[in-house]
Amino acid sequence: DTGVSQNPRHKITKRGQNVTFRCDPISEHNRLYWYRQTLGQGPEFLTYFQNEAQLEKSRLLSDRFSAERPKGSFSTLEIQRTEQGDSAMYLCASSGGIYRARGFRDTEAFFGQGTRLTVV
Amino acid sequence: GIQVEQSPPDLILQEGANSTLRCNFSDSVNNLQWFHQNPWGQLINLFYIPSGTKQNGRLSATTVATERYSLLYISSSQTTDSGVYFCAADGTGGFKTIFGAGTRLFVKA
Image (cartoon, rainbow over all chains, first blue to last red; front, side, top):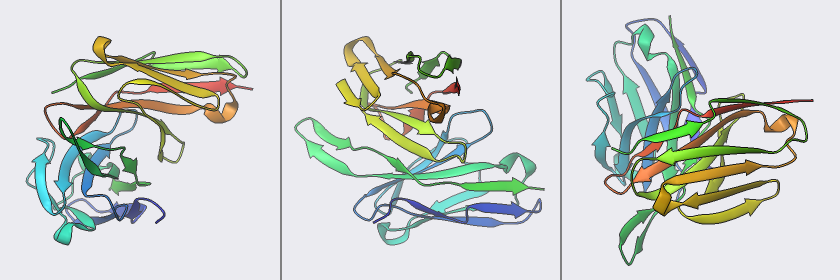
């Protein structure tokens, strides 16, 4: 396993078009995250999956954004009717979870190389 | 939710100098990680350190969870250390990892 893989690496699209990004996590990881990063800022949380269940969504994720993780493996992030403000780097991360005495704890997260979206 | 603050925001060093980057967090954390983002945008894992001290070559990190801060030490800096360093933490109340705004480091030859 070579780590978290994201495709495509770059995407240029016209305003109003739909785009879809794919993330393949580390195979034994059950948790998957999507983040968005704009120039000069830290990554901002978008959504989180544990296996196939989407457990948390940020208010940043408008109705034009949808994410899926069928069968708890790869995940897709779709943006409908893209706007120029959607231009950003979209990052995917995965981590494992382990049970400890005080409950379930997340383990170290690893990030993919990101998909850089430019909306023109 | 948890808030993460990093300082300083920018740092310029002469090659060979040492530095300390700080990360403060507002609440108890389950996990804390330090990352280095390279010029191509890839986040490279440096340390997974919810508490205690770890060392890896010229880098080391210390998290004092009871006082809600973590420190990243870079010794004998090299030009290849340039980039943005992020601290990221998971609060105890949820699953999402929150990032600080980063420290932008430039090491001059």
